[in-house]
Image (cartoon, rainbow, N blue to C red; front, side):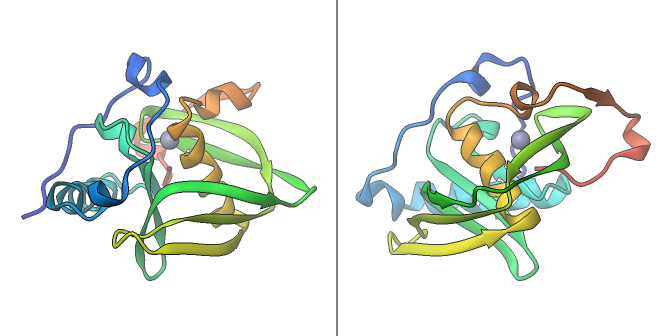
Length: 164
Ligand code: ZN
């Protein structure tokens, strides 16, 4: 049974650490399969649209992105190309409750990484999908959206929106 994991909340110093790449044998281990299921449940329960392993205390380059077809796990994700064009959008973060800011992100990106079976994945992402991936890849490098915004707004929990 998957379980909900406690979230690391800013300013927990773990959120500022760099996550390490996962090895081929590690990716297919039962322990990682369990971590992915637990992260899926945690993201779903928190109404998140993305989650990085560091947010539940594992310094591994593993992120989950919510899509209309379910959650997409990405291991050792890399942004291999990006558009010149950027756009501003409002972001929040499960690790920074009730806080939002306008963040400039690339409009479209190309991403490569591995799936939970260790198979290579390559795809193009745009708009909100691309934004969430950039936000989560930042987490694997110890970067928070607060570092990329000048205006930070706080909101009551009742007004909360979905956030990565
Ligand atoms: Zn976040």
